[in-house]
Image (cartoon, rainbow, N blue to C red; front, side, top):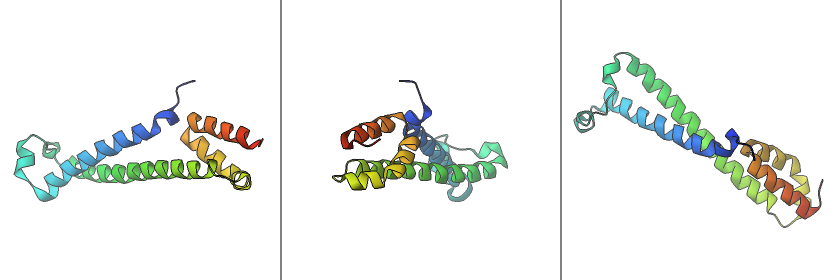
Length: 124
């Protein structure tokens, strides 16, 4: 099996979400809260000057984007399992196009699971 981004996308999304959230919290503290305990620990970006406003804005946007991507991935996995592990062949066939799109977005592992489900229900 070849290495694909889609095999590791959830881990990548979580890592970037955590990184952007931490940077967002640090810049929020520097700009709005001014908690001296956090600043004394060395977690500050105030030395970046006026760039801190750009870092604040970008970290906020990246936090929102990666939170959405994590949510969408979890929702896709939930929908895929619900539709592929159903007890009705009619429901499976009716949602086959949707399952194929979800499996493509989720990666090769889910495409293999879809193929096994197709074989189980004798669908081409």
